[in-house]
Image (cartoon, rainbow, N blue to C red; front, side, top):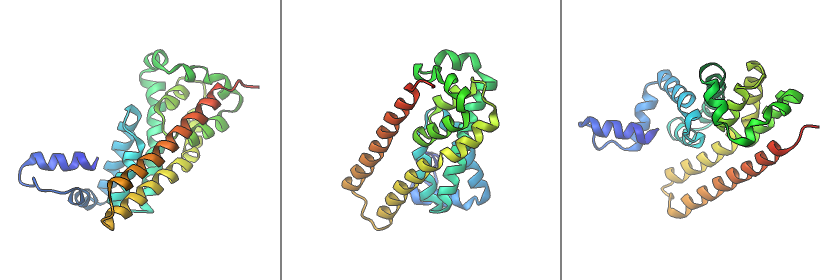
Length: 208
């Protein structure tokens, strides 16, 4: 997002030398409107392929912690609601035809324990759009999905915020290097891989 803001100012002409820090200042300078803009973009764009971690890093660089943690948590929850609503009310047939195979048999698990299943899948897979789409075309009511997602997202929000805070500190100390970048990417990759493995096992379990 910061790259997008910087690019927009660059193309505008007069502010071609705008840095990412200045782009962050511009967004922060909007006050509450900047926060609402961030949440709106998070909610609308993330369900269609943009990584949630990008929004966490953006929030951390612009507003710092702990506000970035809260904004990431709220934005992630709104994004899960968008995916759910898109599947249920806008493109149900298209979603059903394009769901990954592992998510197509989720109904049986949801019928047995919808809140618990969604909670654990969110804790593992965070904002994975296919999960919101799958629940959206199921018989689970919206309130159950939204509350389970709100609470289930917390572990991943915490981990993502921790990584973002590490990067922010490295940037502020001017210690940002290829090594720190590779370390961050490695940790993030391990978290994502672990979440993928756990989520895959949970989805493969047969309901008792």
